[in-house]
Length: 190
Image (cartoon, rainbow, N blue to C red; front, side, top):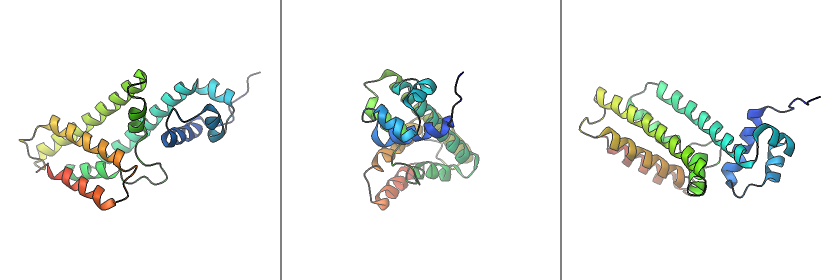
């Protein structure tokens, strides 16, 4: 008779996200995952597969959570410049979460070593750039953003700034410096 799962999959997956986010893929052992997730090794393998499969599942869950946050942000229907400010500022506000970004960290750690992670991260970046591009177009249509500016180039620029902030928050302690970078980034919109 098969045993039923005695854990909620997303709860233990969230624990795996946290451990991978803090330590990275390479530094996280299966034994640490067993202990941190609070489930048996066999349950990890039966539910998620090997360590790499668990890692990919963790990345996908993290992306889904982040996408939901971005949708909620955009649905606020604030002025576009304010939405772009909030988009950048969300990088600074990480209550109860490790600093930085799990996807960015994974791309930096494994991007050239693991084609599956590299493709996932690149796809995630492209989706974020598309969101930024669409926001910029709306801003240009409403007159908030200078229509002479290239929306594709701006989406690349904002993506680069966002990724830079997501990296800097891991070590930066000067919040004024980070806020200044956000203000300078937004000033390009005219």
